[in-house]
Length: 508
Image (cartoon, rainbow, N blue to C red):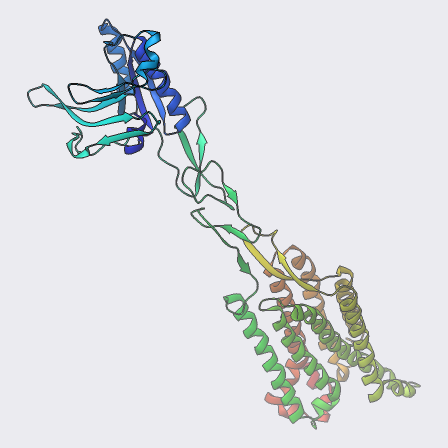
């Protein structure tokens, strides 16, 4: 019977046997062998009464109808054999013979006849009668080998498909799911539970799901592990492309404005606003726009180390120029007062250059100390997403990053306060108003940057920083140079010394 179950892949069967010693022994042996083989389970086990009690037979029929098993094994035979005397066992072990119907009978070492079973097939005829076909035989040799011979072409299956029935309690669990035993039911009855994210099974009827390795994740079907997707601010995505275009556009505008100022360097508008500092400021703005490109693309060690250093030095150069411009405005106003003529000797061209260089050098020293002590490095961040690896730049020293930003903030705040103090000076010194407005934009952007940067996960922290760089750079470019370019290009009649020194030009 086990051979037949294996042959047709039946795992869920019923068992009927006679209520006699042979039936009970055969059933016990079959159940024991079935458990050891692991081929399947018994849906029910029923004893057929010898007296043919109709009520008991009806109960058995009811059990069979209610079961999901479509195959039933029966051990229902009459006992016609008698035991030979115990002293004949020795001789029976060496005896073998062939019966009149052709069956070859042999005995084992215990004197038991080795089993020979015919496999029969009941065929129900149209007139209601039954016909029995012999469709195979099962034999067991003295060495323990078992042989099942079946002529499947002679087997009649009473189903529409005319094929062997499928008799299982639960269908096999496919790869990507695991077996969950049903409490209180045979082991052949189970549920299939889909593996959770990050775990897989690649075999049928697996009892547990296996976790993928650290840098891998489960496929959508949970039947194999795939490398985790990598996330960073890329040049190939819409957000990266947009920021790149804006950065290059800011660089181009800065270059155009620089070209305009150089071309019109001899005009009163350019000369009155400290042309050398204006040129240096426009150059620093170009660097500010370009440094934002270091935050886009897959992080590398050199880009991680360079991005914040380039950002910090470029912005300090920019703010230093604005700070010196503001100091010059105040110095010129003081020099116009009685007794203030000597003050301008402290704000000559060399002093202006030296101040910008010194302020920028301090930021360079901060960056060098940061890079030497605890340099930024590439980092695989796996805490934001379970199925993604976020490539980012770890700042290394948080203190170093804070000092870099703090120094920029200090210079910006100082520039804003000095420009705010000078905003009500006579109109011929009204560049302080433009500086006040530009520094107000700059400070507002970077104050908003800090909480946004801290709360932004993964690549969006880089997006926030790039946005802050571009917004503050555009704020300075438009606020400081927009009105001047307007007069230089569209109102050239106002680009005269008389107009600039007069009150009318500044009020418009």
